[in-house]
Image 1 (cartoon, one colour):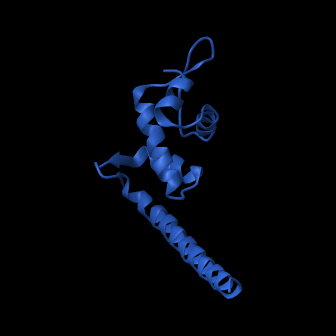
Image 2 (image 1 turned 180 degrees about the horizontal axis):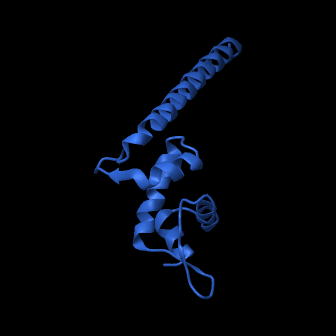
Length: 117
């Protein structure tokens, strides 16, 4: 399939798909004309990329993690145990960010509550 078809099936813009390729997350075949050609497996790969991005992982980490993920039905699991320390660091970073955002929201709630009377 061509890039427009992959974009349609995944909801990801062609521009973003080209960015994923630049980051080494996708490796489409090239036709002699230079057009990118994607396989059915790339649809699932893009979905995995989206899941990992939504978890807050940077593309450099995703490039390492993606080849070592397996679908367990309800989500993804790491198939390479040596990646677990990096994944735990990322999870801890995300947890810290959540805490900081929660603190900021509480502060804003206090300010809004004090000024809306």
